[in-house]
Every structure is written in C-alpha cells, then in structure tokens.
Length: 151
Length: 333
Image (cartoon, rainbow over all chains, first blue to last red; front, side):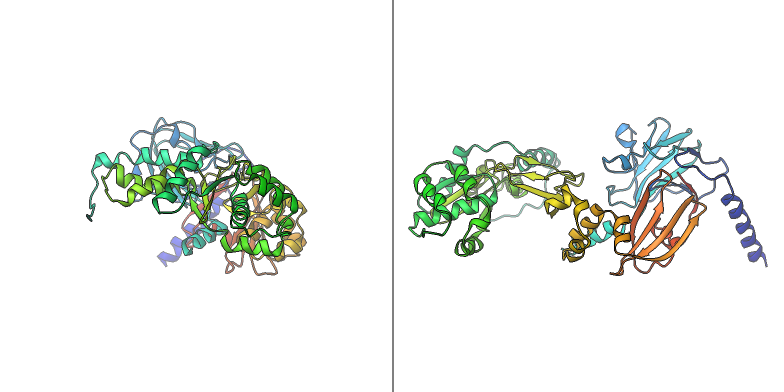
C-alpha cells in the first residue's frame, strides 16, 4: 500500500515537472533551487545532470584555468560548451577525457555558474549545486572504436 | 654484453616531452628534404652492409619512388625493353638516369594507364620494398631514447645511426640491390583533432609531385566523396564494399536524402514533449536503424542506433546512456 502510494506521488511530481514551461529553441535555462538529484538538461549533446557524487577515479584540478572551461573535447563549433568563468568553481576530470568519452567533468558551483554555447541556450546552475557532464552515445563512433580494438 | 633496464629515474622520465616534440616535428614536417645529406646516408647504409654504392635518386611521392626506382633498375640491369613504357620515358631514362632530374621524368611517366601489363607486374612485385624514414619517427624516437637517455649500448647502433639520420631527411626510401630512391616529404598534411588525416574540402595530403590524397577521419576515400559528395549515386553508395567508406559516403551524401532515396521504412515516430522535439525511427533495406530528431537550434539530427531499438523513446534512453531510466530529463536547449 505504502509503496503504491509512493509510486503515486512520484508519478504526480513527474507530471508536475513535465508540465513546467518548456525550454524554447536556443533559450536560456536555469536549474531551479528546488532541483533534485539526477535532474538533467541537454544543451545539444552535452548532458548537464545534478549530482552529489564525484566518481572515485576522477582527479581534482588544482587550479581551474581557461583551458578547463570547455566541457566537450574538440575544436568544432559543436564542442564549444564552455563555462563562462573559472571563478567560483571546483572541477574534477575523468582519468581519460577525449572525444570518445561518455562522461566529462564534474563541477561544484560555489556561485551561480553558466555554461554557454554558440547556438544552444545558456544553462545556469545555482550556487551550491554540483553537476556531472555526460555526452550522447554515438553508435558510429562505438563501432569505429570496436573495429580499431579488433585490428 | 646484454643487460636489462628495469627502471627509469624521474630525471630520465622528464625527458619524454623533449623526445616527443623532436620526433613528432620530424614526422609531421613538410619542409623539403636535404637530398645530398640523404644520399650520403643511403651510401653509408649500403657500405655498412657490404654492398656497392647504389645509384641514389629522388622522388616526390612514394608512387613516384616505385616507378622511378623500377625504371632505373631495369635500365641499369640492361632489362629495358621497347614498349615497356612510353618511348619518350625510356629515352629520358637513358639520358638522365645518372642525373637528379627524376621529378621531370616522373611527371612524364604520368598515370599508370600508360604502363604495359608487364611493367605493372614488376611494380606489384616490389612496390613495398620501402624502409620508412620520418614516417616511422616513433621507432627512431624509441631507439634514440634508449641509447641517449637510458645509456643502451650495442654494436648495431653504429649502423642504426645512418638510418636515424636518413629518417630526418626522407619520408621513406625505396631500396634495391643497386638503386635507391629517396622520397621527399609531403607538401601539405591536414589532420583532425585525433591527428588522423582529414580534410572535408580538399586533399588531406599533397605530395610535392602534386598527387593528392583524400581522407576523412583517417579513412582514404576518392576525390568525389570529398569534393562533390552530392553527385554520388545511390548505386555507388550501395556498391561500396568497405563499410567505413560507405558510412562516410552516406554522411557526405546526407542521411535525410539517403533515407528518402532508398525509401527507408518508418519504425516509430513521436512528439517528445519533454525535449520539445519531433522524432522518428527509420530502418534501411540493409537493416540499419537511424534515429532522426529535430534540434532546438533548428537542425535535423541523424544518429545511428543499435538494431534492437524499437521506439523513439528507447532510442533517446540509449543515446543518453540511460537504459535504466535513472535520470529525469527536464528539457533540451
């Protein structure tokens, strides 16, 4: 009975969440201070997810500089998902971070922090939240890596 | 004396970047080689292994090196036959074989369409008689680090030094018993962020002879795929046997156009109210699944997905690496 009721509540809050105003094309988005663990927004193919855990094998960046601001490896326009500042952020990076990675930096925002992109809307994370960057899977890339590994 | 190096000191390790920088620069150099220096090194190598000094010639591409080398070898060994290659080439070879004007000869050799089957067979037999120079920089970096930093000593290193020197003055060298052809470096090298040969609007590599090489993300393709991909036909794409090249062909042709032209089957479609997108899942006659979605920036995105995916919703969860549906997607911008 209690489990069924909990599920009912979950369904209800999900429906509330889903009926929130939709993000318009290219419009900015700000995570609410009431955001929950595992809430995720996609800025193009960059997933920005509220988290409270830093993966064990991640390495803390001692001094966050401009070279750490870009959150997607590469030099194409599509990869220019960038923190607007290195001030007020703590950052951890995975041991391997390249254009085949599915998981990227973990960022603790000590102040309101924004992620910009040339074509997608700016995403703002309120102070006190931590986010995990993830990337969409790409089957073509996976198959290419598998072929390379077989070779 | 044989011995093992079991550890390296932090001081030795700190020199890795120096070696990497030096040999990466050599490997990627597009500066013209010092042919006279390369010639000296080649002659030293022949002497070191007890062979007579060879005729050393110059080429502007590996292809040219094989052709020039074989023409010279046949001439020197008295094996040139009338009709083996165009008469003007044979006469030029006869008059210039001892000179260093082989690039002019090579330009008149031209396309392999000019070759007789006999000469093509000769080329097939020994086209790979190369020893890599700067193209194999990693090897020379490895050996020289062992020698110069870790103190490895061995008699073989005396001979190796000629190869190492030659590597700094040639892309590669085509060797034969009495002829060697030193190949110059490319004129242009273009690469992607993964350091693979890559150029979407022209040759990824150009030899000094003018021969282009077209590559997309390290895969060699033909000129049409790079320069005029829209002129490909469905028949050409479907006839492509190399799956990597076929994938590039379709990408360059345009997935939307391809799906329409091959009349791909619609498996599922939906309005995604959370992401604010329209989505569709297609299957090609070959059984490949393709997920198409509108993007908030006004583009259509086409993504390859595994065959077991049956719905647009499943496709989104697979792409997000979230098949357990752990995350709450609030939206997409």
